[in-house]
Length: 63
Image (cartoon, rainbow, N blue to C red):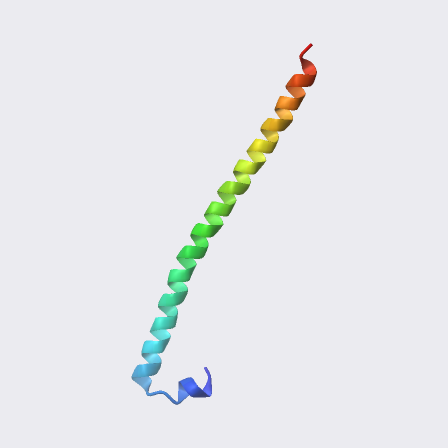
């Protein structure tokens, strides 16, 4: 805790701490959703790459 924060009255420090906790909580939900979107995009890219590989293999096996 910085000296500026310590200079604040106790109720103000408590309010500031609660505000920071809420901000972290709100950001965590956003970061979790972003991670889920990135994971879905990665899985879609992997599936697309596998499908392209299968398509190439099928083309080579056809007369």
